[in-house]
Length: 180
Image 1: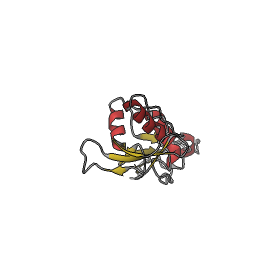
Image 2: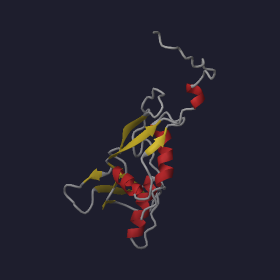
Image 3: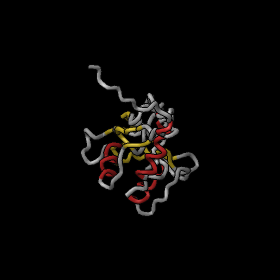
């Protein structure tokens, strides 16, 4: 099982080193090309990645590795079994990346804006009680670890009742007898 809290490059290096006895490659030794979707041609793996030697790293050449990137939606499915939800309070968050910090903490991942997904503003709120918005986070095509997309829900924080009931002294009830 991979430690998804690590940086994407380190996750791939760990997989390479674990699968290849005696390997202890680091980012000083190799670099990576762009991942390619190969799911149509290889049912065992969904991604191919060129591992290229770095000048002065002590290695030469390029090797293409194949592995499975994780579908973002699968993280939500697996998390649901342990009581984790895709619903988050808006809080002071204004950007997707702000909310994704909470996501990473809840799901033990390290999704990084610009490496794994595109950042942007969260949906606009009208500040209504119970308001919530569903939005999609999509993996970047060149994400080393993730593919696909997932839907998250951001919901309004609890509205302080004192902001709704601002007049506390109400006019009393008055009985008016019916007109005969």
